Image (cartoon, rainbow, N blue to C red; front, side, top):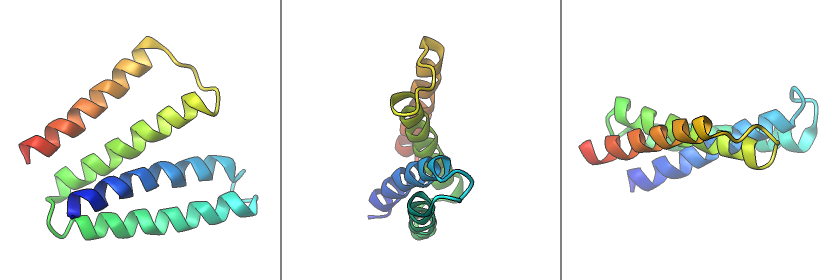
Length: 104
Protein backbone atom coordinates (compact mmCIF):
# COMPACT_ATOMS: atom_id res chain seq x y z
CA UNK A 1 0.00 0.00 0.00
CA UNK A 2 2.87 2.40 0.77
CA UNK A 3 4.15 2.16 -2.80
CA UNK A 4 0.74 3.03 -4.25
CA UNK A 5 0.46 6.01 -1.90
CA UNK A 6 4.00 7.09 -2.86
CA UNK A 7 3.19 7.04 -6.58
CA UNK A 8 -0.05 8.97 -6.03
CA UNK A 9 1.86 11.48 -3.91
CA UNK A 10 4.41 11.88 -6.71
CA UNK A 11 1.61 12.58 -9.18
CA UNK A 12 0.18 15.11 -6.73
CA UNK A 13 3.59 16.78 -6.71
CA UNK A 14 3.13 17.32 -10.45
CA UNK A 15 -0.33 18.76 -9.77
CA UNK A 16 0.86 21.25 -7.15
CA UNK A 17 3.89 22.34 -9.17
CA UNK A 18 1.72 22.88 -12.25
CA UNK A 19 -0.93 24.72 -10.24
CA UNK A 20 1.77 26.92 -8.73
CA UNK A 21 2.91 27.87 -12.23
CA UNK A 22 -0.70 28.70 -13.16
CA UNK A 23 -1.37 30.69 -9.98
CA UNK A 24 0.63 33.76 -11.08
CA UNK A 25 2.45 34.03 -7.78
CA UNK A 26 -0.57 32.78 -5.78
CA UNK A 27 -2.65 35.69 -7.07
CA UNK A 28 -5.25 33.54 -8.88
CA UNK A 29 -7.73 31.82 -6.55
CA UNK A 30 -8.49 28.47 -8.20
CA UNK A 31 -4.90 27.49 -9.08
CA UNK A 32 -3.79 28.67 -5.62
CA UNK A 33 -6.37 26.45 -3.91
CA UNK A 34 -5.43 23.49 -6.13
CA UNK A 35 -1.79 24.14 -5.25
CA UNK A 36 -2.47 24.17 -1.50
CA UNK A 37 -4.67 21.08 -1.45
CA UNK A 38 -2.37 19.06 -3.72
CA UNK A 39 0.67 20.14 -1.69
CA UNK A 40 -0.82 19.01 1.61
CA UNK A 41 -2.06 15.71 0.17
CA UNK A 42 1.27 15.07 -1.55
CA UNK A 43 3.26 15.69 1.63
CA UNK A 44 0.86 13.63 3.75
CA UNK A 45 1.13 10.74 1.31
CA UNK A 46 4.91 10.97 1.29
CA UNK A 47 4.95 10.99 5.09
CA UNK A 48 2.70 7.91 5.17
CA UNK A 49 4.82 6.05 2.61
CA UNK A 50 8.04 6.81 4.49
CA UNK A 51 6.73 4.85 7.46
CA UNK A 52 7.70 1.67 5.60
CA UNK A 53 9.85 2.77 2.64
CA UNK A 54 13.40 3.98 3.41
CA UNK A 55 13.61 7.78 3.21
CA UNK A 56 16.32 7.86 0.53
CA UNK A 57 14.41 5.54 -1.77
CA UNK A 58 10.98 7.04 -1.09
CA UNK A 59 12.03 10.65 -1.44
CA UNK A 60 14.01 10.01 -4.63
CA UNK A 61 11.07 8.20 -6.22
CA UNK A 62 8.62 10.92 -5.12
CA UNK A 63 10.83 13.67 -6.53
CA UNK A 64 11.47 11.69 -9.72
CA UNK A 65 7.77 11.19 -10.41
CA UNK A 66 7.09 14.86 -9.71
CA UNK A 67 9.99 16.10 -11.82
CA UNK A 68 9.16 13.94 -14.83
CA UNK A 69 5.45 14.71 -14.57
CA UNK A 70 6.03 18.45 -14.23
CA UNK A 71 8.50 18.52 -17.13
CA UNK A 72 6.09 16.52 -19.29
CA UNK A 73 3.25 18.89 -18.37
CA UNK A 74 5.44 21.86 -19.27
CA UNK A 75 6.24 20.40 -22.66
CA UNK A 76 2.72 19.16 -23.43
CA UNK A 77 0.68 22.09 -22.10
CA UNK A 78 2.89 25.11 -21.51
CA UNK A 79 4.81 25.00 -24.78
CA UNK A 80 8.21 24.30 -23.27
CA UNK A 81 10.73 22.94 -25.80
CA UNK A 82 10.65 19.24 -26.59
CA UNK A 83 14.11 18.12 -27.56
CA UNK A 84 15.81 14.77 -27.85
CA UNK A 85 18.15 15.61 -24.98
CA UNK A 86 15.29 16.66 -22.68
CA UNK A 87 13.42 13.43 -23.43
CA UNK A 88 16.62 11.43 -22.87
CA UNK A 89 17.15 13.09 -19.50
CA UNK A 90 13.57 12.31 -18.47
CA UNK A 91 14.04 8.69 -19.54
CA UNK A 92 17.16 8.55 -17.37
CA UNK A 93 15.17 9.85 -14.38
CA UNK A 94 12.46 7.22 -14.98
CA UNK A 95 15.16 4.54 -15.26
CA UNK A 96 16.60 5.64 -11.94
CA UNK A 97 13.19 5.58 -10.26
CA UNK A 98 12.43 2.10 -11.59
CA UNK A 99 15.89 0.94 -10.53
CA UNK A 100 15.39 2.26 -7.00
CA UNK A 101 12.08 0.43 -6.74
CA UNK A 102 13.54 -2.89 -7.82
CA UNK A 103 16.71 -2.56 -5.78
CA UNK A 104 14.71 -1.76 -2.65
